[in-house]
Image 1 (cartoon, one colour):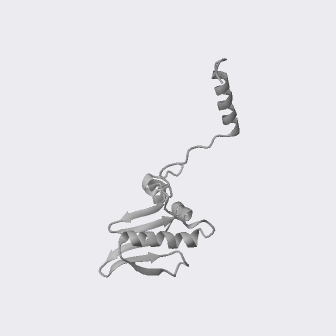
Image 2 (cartoon, rainbow, N blue to C red):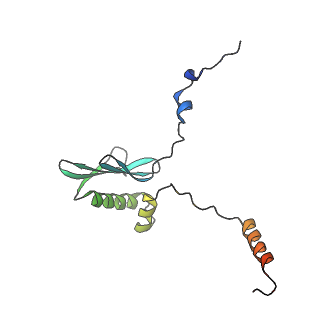
Length: 134
């Protein structure tokens, strides 16, 4: 008699879709705090507290977090964006690095056309032209 595996015997990763959930990217809000995610890890956290706004930056080594204070959540987010962008994307201009760091992956990029598709589109346009058109 062959061994039958019941659904309850499967590991939980088979049932939950392990590693299929989209990874967060950019700023994500958790309650009152905001977390900056990049490449599957949290690199900054802006959280209000009793002593004001605290910004925790994790762009260094795993055990070295930098903690700074901010006047507001928006100021803390701007500081975290620039600080992390300067360290993670060092060779990129700061404005472009911040855009890459905070970009959401929700919208897929438009598909690029291959050379064959471009040639087919050009031939179709030429075929649809009337003799008097330029």
